[in-house]
Amino acid sequence: MPQSNARFTIVSIFFIALFTALGVRIIYLHTAEKTLITAGRRAFGRVKKLRGSIVTADGDIIASSIRGKRVFLRRGEQLTAQEKTLISNLEPNLRWPEKSDSRQLLIRFLSPEDAKMLMRQPVAKKLEFIPAQERIYFDEAVYAPLCGFTNYENAGAAGVEFGYNKELEGGQGEIIEIDATGRLLLSNDPNMLHAGGDSVKLTINGRLQKLLYQEIDSAVGRYNARGGYGIVMEPHTGKILASVMAGPDAANLLKNPLIADAMEPGSTFKIVTIAAALENGVVTPEDKFFCENGTFEFAGIKINDHDPYGWLSASDIIKFSSNIGASKIGSLTGKHALYKTARDFGFGSPTEVKLPGEARGLLKRIDRWDNHSLLYISFGQEIAATPLQMAQSFAVIANGGVLVKPRILDSVIAANGKKAHKSKTEKIRRAISKKTADTVKEMLFQVMEGGTGERARVPGWEICGKTGTAQKFDTKAGKYSEKTYFSSLGGFFPKNDPRFVIFIALDEPQEYYYGGIVGATAFQRTVKAIIDIYGVPPGGSAAAPQRAKKNET
Image 1 (cartoon, rainbow, N blue to C red):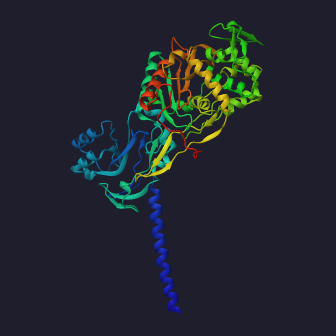
Image 2 (image 1 turned 135 degrees about the horizontal axis):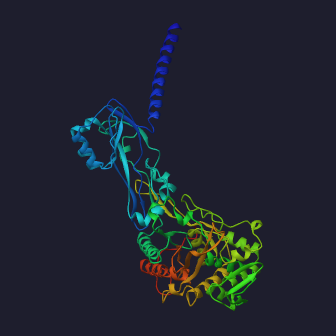
Image 3 (image 1 turned 45 degrees about the horizontal axis):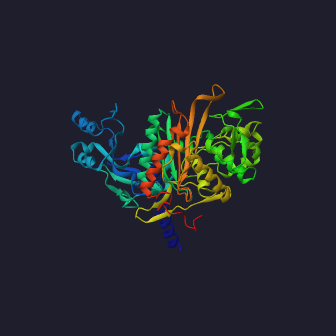
């Protein structure tokens, strides 16, 4: 019995010592999680999998990563003038540390070729080479606001990079032990340095994206605008086929204005006003309204039209974009019905596209409407929406009355090349009846045939659209500006079987500011690009893309 107790005591002491040593080792490695530390000629650090690529639906690479080395000067080492010259040639912007008694970062990222060259030099014994990766972006101006960027730790910080960071990273990585040359000494996964995260395939058509960017960039330059926006999406599936922003500050933005910036839409919102009126049976397209010959003074407010219209039918009020006519239609509809329809169209709520920083826009609760709100909201003031929300609202009319969630993700592709996830169409709710949608569709067709959008028509193809010219509110003056405008043109085609929604907008165009003028060329050329890319026959339906299958919800 005493012998058995002695054996038990020895075994217990052994395991206690073993687990104590393992605990110390784990704590030591955990301490090294974010800061690499050296131990003689070895180093510990967390190494992530190679970040996955971001690609378009037609195969263009937007972002990818390559492996390389991060180079440190070892503690206590000093470099000769010749060695400094060698390092400076590899890192021209290097600021040399004043002290050499601590470990110093010399090169944040060194390509595999340059790393191999440097490792063969005598100076290598004074350096540490830690596995690292570099993110490479292609066509940055075209994709920047959408794609986003990564931070110093190679984690997504904006755009798709942030929204799909979990998939692209493929995990948190692993703490490894390496020697001074970067050779793997200790790891639970010997293939860690060769493993990769998932790739993200977007719904974006790369060819269309580039063409749309060229048109928006040209429009910004032509009208000396502060910025320009363009979106193309499928109304039945919610797939975003192109999403661009151009302007002097576009490349330096830390956000995506197409989802983050909400503006008063102006007359493009009239599609909601007329839809609410038709849906609730308060007007017909033929009902006539007196548009006061261009100036309407009522209850202490003044509403103006761009032209002095007299009697106009409801259909012509949309065709010629009468603010006075729209306000009278809104008054008949009533605030409760207009508010409900606007909510059903998605106003006041984020679209929930999986991208960071999305604004919900502005749709005030009814109890916050004053005596004039109904009139103003009817023609797109006192309400705000992002460009994506506006595109989504046009999609409601185009697809027969259903609010569909916009989506930017086509699929997630695993490192082995197999699809790990495929996105599906999400129908949120029915906003209006198909009958109402078809009636509004006919009105929007007339806008492009002799109305305010006629400059954007493409002969031979039936296109529906609505223009908007919104005065921007001057917060300092406390009133709407007479000099700054948010001008837009939204629409869809082909009329009888809409497959493509287009929304074009310019922020603060100069000299010319009507949406039907400044947005016309970009809209028209975008239609022509779509016709060419997707093979849309005159007056017909697109051969591609296909509509959502019945089992997609």
